[in-house]
Image 1 (cartoon, one colour):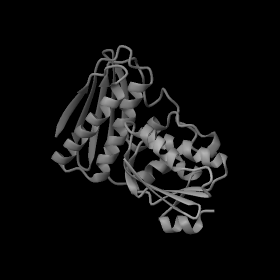
Image 2 (spheres, chains in turn orange, cyan):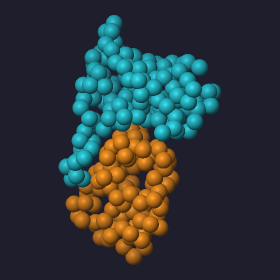
Image 3 (cartoon, rainbow over the protein chains, first blue to last red):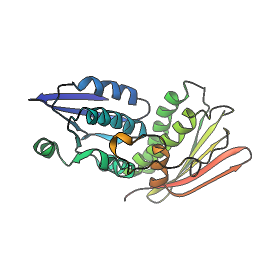
Length: 111
Length: 142
């Protein structure tokens, strides 16, 4: 699990890569939490580098989305692989987390 | 091809140790029988959710063996999991979560088994000879 990050005038783009499963979801949570600052004006999670996520990883995304929702910070994910998109749909996560097709769309539209 | 993997859980360390072995087992089968990439991902997901559910929900008492058997079919794999832990029907004993709830009301409980029940086909469970027997089919494609 690697995690790249780029901040551009308040927009925090976080790009994890690898698989998120029950063996590393705690590390994933810790890394994501550390990458998000209270004064971020928007947070975009670019999932393009993730090809596998299980319910352990979904739990992390839910906690992050709830934290950001609690502080009314716009949050979205983008670039879901087909396998991750399927998991999102079955879980109903596409109804509680904003999903964009590409990072450019997310940057242009998330508000 | 049909192959089995036995996991003999040591309470506590069980989940962390089991997962890499399951992934390696699935990938080995996938390579031998040339599975489609999405079949590999689905099989891994189904097995992770099932096995971690067994190992992390207090059902390890009396559990000494989990046997996972994979049998390749045409664009599919039949997965059988037999364990000697407490009786538990993963198809019916835990309700699916409400996937329509708003963000702040959502919780993650039950989501793993919900993924399994939705993604897999031909699911069957029985408790026999003091063991849980679960069979299901993962299929490639939509």
